[in-house]
Image (cartoon, rainbow, N blue to C red; front, side, top):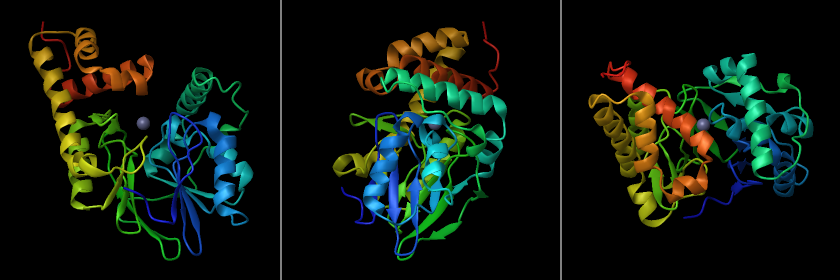
Length: 294
Ligand SMILES: [Zn+2]
């Protein structure tokens, strides 16, 4: 499955995706990928835009692998407007979050052997205008509708472009090597609701996070696979918690039984453990099992 002629994959390196939307009047970027990719990303965008400016950056959520290049994009296009959820604006106002974004960005640059991260000012990581459920952006012959789809984070947004191409938020899950993995952090219930919301939009083209447009069976089965992945993770965690296992023991069991080759290839161990720890805490909280039962 291909995206429309006015939707371009401008991703410049591993770890995060970026898509450029070129309308008749305006242009927008959906996510930026990691900070270490900024120079390549700017070059890829320039190649598509030639002398047109980049007008908007749409923030899928506030994690470093989705927004890392924003400060550098502002350097290239000073008038660009960054649009994101109210909660993303809040996240960017917190020094701790900015520190985490900087630290993970630098670690990723080292992992991907990209050398030193180019310096940037934290003040440039901010939302210029808050967008939320149902908001519409008209790029000229290409409309984008915002859908609030929390569950991965509270600020997770999905974007429906041109009425038929859905950039699904990470709350639905992520796909690697044909397998869909759960990616809820703040709420499994919200993630399931987000999957249903996206399914009902009936997009002809689905672009999951960290992935290009899906084709064939992967597209047809995607929402079912997302739902099954979330439910399987919840069931696994609950089964172990009810046997009296501690959070740490559940993490070890989850890593042993649920982390497969695709997950190993796609996600560094530290990030896998961090996300899984958060998933376990969330499921225990949602089910009133905050303390180990033992
Ligand atoms: Zn994320």
